[in-house]
Amino acid sequence: MPSPKDIVALLKAQSIQHIRLFDANQALLLALAKTGISVTISVPNDQLLGIGQSNATAANWVNRNVIAHVPATNITSIAVGSDVLTTLANAAPVLVSALKFIQSALVAANLDQKIKVSTPYSSSIIVGSFPPSQANFNRTWNQQVTVPLLKFLQSTGSYFMLNVYPYYDYMQSDGRIPLDYALFRQLPPNKEAVDSNTLLHYTNVFDAVVDAAYFAMSDLNFTNIPIVVTETGWPSKGDSSEPDATVDNANTYNSNLIKHVLNNTGTPKHPGIAVSTYIYELYNEDLRSGPESEKNWGLFYANGEPVYTLHLTGAGTLFANDTTNQTFCVTKSNDDPKMLQAALDWACGPGKVDCSPLLQGQPCYEPNNVVAHAAYAFNAYYQKMAKSAGTCDFKGVATITTTDPSHGSCIFPGRYDH
Image (cartoon, rainbow, N blue to C red; front, side, top):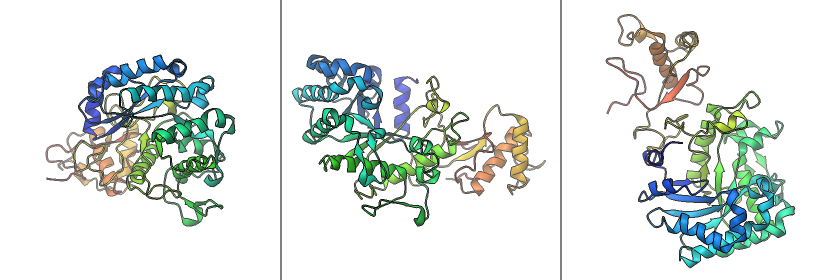
């Protein structure tokens, strides 16, 4: 992991205002002080049994991880455990006690109005999520956990935390869910999913899952608890069994998600009520075990380089290092010259790029090597295609950058001259 100082510098550079931590890392909480960034901290699952069985342990946890840091660090919520019912069922009986004990400690410190307590549910706890109007929570847990949890959230003015993964819904659907529907891509009206009970139209999986949670809550007679999506995203790389974990799909999903959330359309069941959402995750985790995709959910590499530059117009400085949102397409370093040459030949031939600036005596001839020439041609193609998704790949040898690659009198297309 980058140092806390570097993490906070990245958050500031990217104008990220809200961050969720999977623990309550002391050094990071100190580094986040006086930044104004809203922080959700978490009780890790391995501490849940202790906190859920002891008011004193919970109070100690709050003293150490909350009271020691506020108000300098802007802690706004506490996620108690994560996906507990699906990953740590033996802690389920003490889950609601853990929330109540943490809440009591906040009340004692007069912080309960500012800091909300909840627990992230996996969307797999919702059964029969299409049509959303017929969804309900897995009944195994209703009396012991879900109903007391919803009562607690309602009485404390907190929100229901939900983890939403259209990538897994799509992967596990045996082809029933179209990729475009998972990626928020425009569907023709006849391809939209319609809930036959409510006649609501669904244009993406994300909205359908969020509405399924709203309907599952109303099935238990809770109708006024808002939802916050505590995790969603798409992996940018996978192994051979995960062909749809690609940079292009990850970029499409997260870019479309951001547009969808920021335009406040809400969901078909609750139009106009924005669903605050956290993208999983900030950094790739190269040491994570499991399939290749597990390592590749990040928006950034650990060195702070973006894995891709989001396709966002009008998002100001988000994920670009200047306000013009300039992006260019260049060669990746250390790539195979043969593959670069083949891609260069394609761009200047079938790709119909004007490669005349690369001829001898022209401004972009020097340096006369395949890496420099390919960078010029890749970028010219990417700009000509209006930077649309998938046009900066060239079989994996190209990458998007926000740094202007122009040099000397060789000006790369796409540069905005101020």
